[in-house]
Image 1: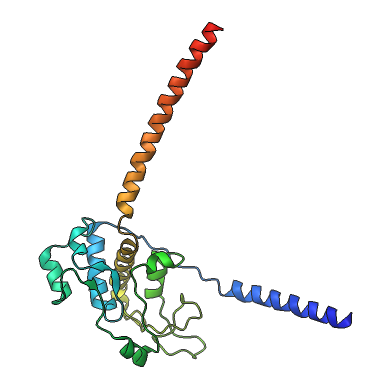
Image 2: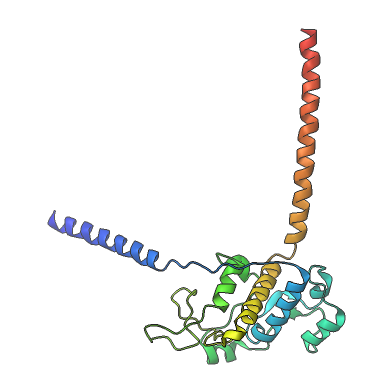
Length: 229
């Protein structure tokens, strides 16, 4: 009996400790205004090409789609400047090989095509991550790898926007870069969302009108039934 009670106390202590640890690690993301207008998306793609594409790919997006999706609306000239000789129908891929990535970072950087959809917080997660680099208060994690919004705080990705120790006068520009590339990745994760939302609004309008018509028809039918009674 004593042994059983000891195990019960131990298990309760373990569960309480686990719950406290999870509560302590609860991360509240930054608030960000994600917008999917053309100006934002075009700037976001440019930021991605300049700062993210050295390590990350967008395997579900092609260079041609940057022109085909009217929400982005790149011209052929703009795409040609970004793709640097890659075939127009090619996927947007990094030149970093898996072997080089392992040698440099100890991990292969993930594809970002659906990253915004896959993470809780979506665009806010990406924005918080890009603007969350800081100095480790315990001095254990090297500068450039300590991130306030990454689980465990130790992130292999170096500070892509040079947020750590940035000049105050550059902060607004860095925040805007983070916001636009976060918005772009939200769009890439679900490119048809704007069209889907527009269609959904029209469907709701149709259903409301249909409901009104059916209600009026029902009243008219039941009026005749009551009259014959």
